[in-house]
Length: 324
Image (cartoon, rainbow, N blue to C red):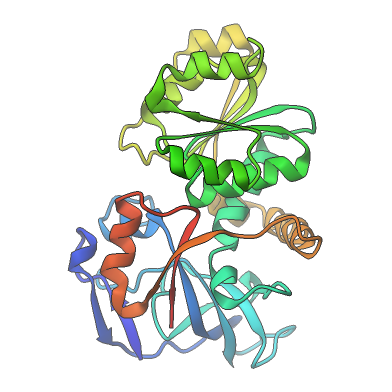
């Protein structure tokens, strides 16, 4: 089969597309004939050796896909060959065929094509886990979303609106922020145009925000600490800015705030019921027409270098996908 292979840690240009042995499903596993794969910043980090999960070399990258079930491993029930599914991998998705645990499959949402399905689970599950399962975002509260034009950020905007929160979205591109506003944000703030604190205070009548969704870190985290309402919760998703900030605990104390570390995958490994709750809620909202991923860039598997570099260069609005 064709597969993208990482043979040494480094930039996307080092990846190769090769003939690779077809993986066979073990007990409790299925093999998926991959039709589309989501392209994420995490893939870039993993291939560079900079992510928490550091696979042994060589390995096939890719964490999320959509396709049809092709083979069943021993003991698999509740799924049949030919079923259209969303699949989660750890890693291994950037290939014609990929194996995953059968209990990690989600059904393909009605009305989604394979590309939309492949870009849905990771971003929306992360946002749901952060905002609902950890931060307990409520209707009427104000949510501040950093990196709102990215995949998880835009998912957080959509989920915040479904819950009934007022959503303030931040970013560095007026063009992208205009699209984020069209997709649901109540207010947008370009951090390049002035102090974030002043813009957020103006947008909230001086009150501040109740929940911060932060996949950026760096200066955005530092500024967020000055934008908090009493009892605010800050969800730390990642550090796409490249700098891991340090919290000033006096600000945490004064605002009665909580800082929450978000690792959706690890959390569901500790408590599988969290994943089932997320699956049920997200697919329910999809069926009601309330959620849908936004795809700005589509590539083929052979264009993997361009796909990942587009993510690195922050050209993507929402998600990028490779179709097979």
